[in-house]
Image 1 (cartoon, rainbow, N blue to C red):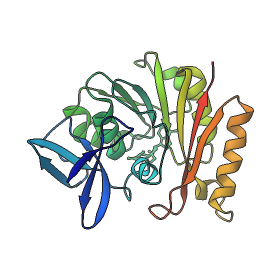
Image 2: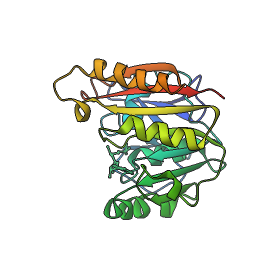
Image 3: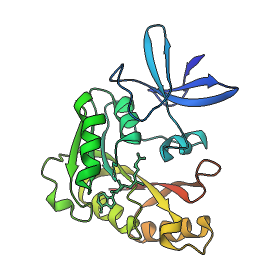
Image 4: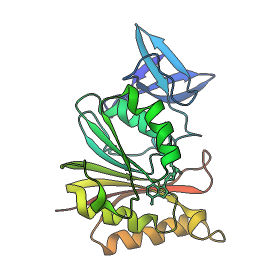
Length: 228
Ligand code: SAM
């Protein structure tokens, strides 16, 4: 019923209701974060990763290649919200990794701390504006991955600013593009291509781009690398 992904260590696939769902091995067994389904096999707890709630899960189902978030990696996560995706990132990177979780809203960050940070030693909350990375006091390098999901019109500029400040050479940026927050009238793929051009101008190399349909109609994802 549970099988390990052939390419991505720490990622699993679970067969439920005639469908295959991604899942992660829970770093905090017994603690439910967002009402996710849980499968226990061989005494191990796997958390089913909902692609309708997490854009990273949708991207994995849609064939995200060269997944940069793996065991032991350090991730700077912008737009942590209450920790739905952060919790799965925490499972994937394991005890040797760290996810620095940046969230601007104090109210939302309180939920993040209660649901996720208090049960997971590898998640460090930062209640700050991602437009002001010079204010993060606790982030230390190397950062292997910047994940950006702030749902703001200047999301790409925020991602570039943080990547240039923290990303290690050849590190990865996973940028969630909320196409509707940039321009409601245009096709998502056109908006994604525009954001891709901004990244290229700043020296990023594009690895992959995708829309997240059918799980999410208004978002896409870009995986880019910042060469040294
Ligand atoms: N990534 C989350 C997940 O998959 O579980 C969902 C993120 S939600 C779409 C966007 C989040 O970004 C909100 O919680 C919002 O408060 C936060 N946000 C918006 N602007 C921000 C900023 N400038 N700095 C940090 N966080 C910001």
